[in-house]
Amino acid sequence: MSMQMLYEIAGCPRGWAAQRAAMVIAITEQLQANNITREEALELMQDLVRMDVLDSEADDIELKTALVSAVYAVAKVI
Image (cartoon, rainbow, N blue to C red; front, side):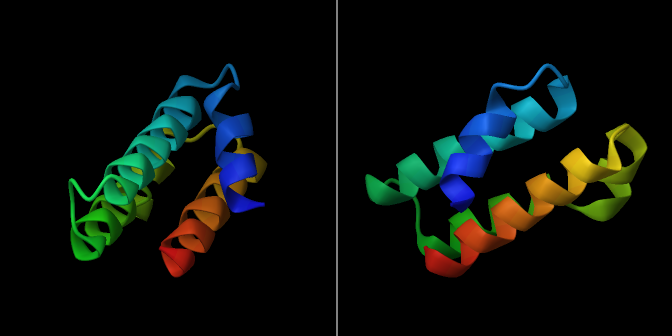
């Protein structure tokens, strides 16, 4: 479900959310290809949803919540 949500968010018109979702998808792909470690992937994902930066860019609280939830769900299973 979480990867599906990331794909949906990556296709949305809100650039701040679509860009972050696409980056998490790319990070997951790099991890699966053994190009980065699990720890590196987790750190990168956490950086993408840092609240101080995200709060300044996010204009839709529901989309922000969905993005953060999806990222943390993916982070738990990698």
